[in-house]
Length: 239
Image (cartoon, rainbow, N blue to C red; front, side, top):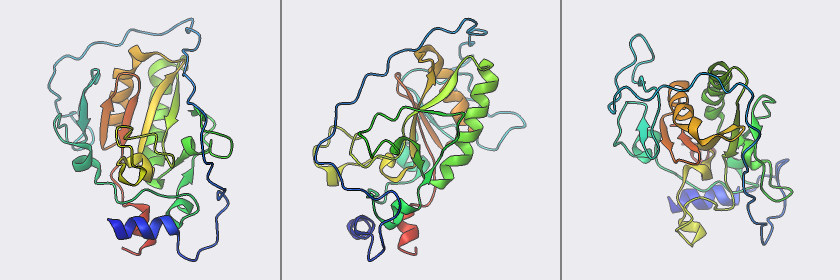
């Protein structure tokens, strides 16, 4: 892993891509995401889970789960396991993708105007909430469409974090080089509804699972989802 980290961080002799800028020595505090206005017609209340154990979806995608909601604190994999880890379901982190690297140039900037992005990073870095692994595009689009159908336009999908170059994730690890999160490869995404409504997140997480994410975790204040895909650092190394 050390060689992959070194190769991806340095970017070889490649010229800087369009996103390349000087890394800021400090960053501004993250703002608090405040709830938006309450919709006039919030829609039909979400039914509670019928069973604490997921069951296969009849006639649906193989391995997906017929979960009405994913309760607070629960996580589930695409194989319907409530115990499988994120590393097992979505694959391990290979590297921390550095800005101005080969792998960074392969990230996709998703400019879908029907998805909201929090963009709380300092100026010059607020593209990070929409930068992601190319394999993230399809499930995210399906989730956006599912949210629109589910709540009839009363709620929208908001992305609060995807790719991370600062080390906002794995906060209990003080050493940046040792931090571990699929956000560093653009393979994890944090999602909420807009207007902000935590009561909707159990349903949002269930929709994310159906949309095709490989591991979903209801972290109470947001829905975390990850995909299994080849690391862009491995792509750059020709593996």
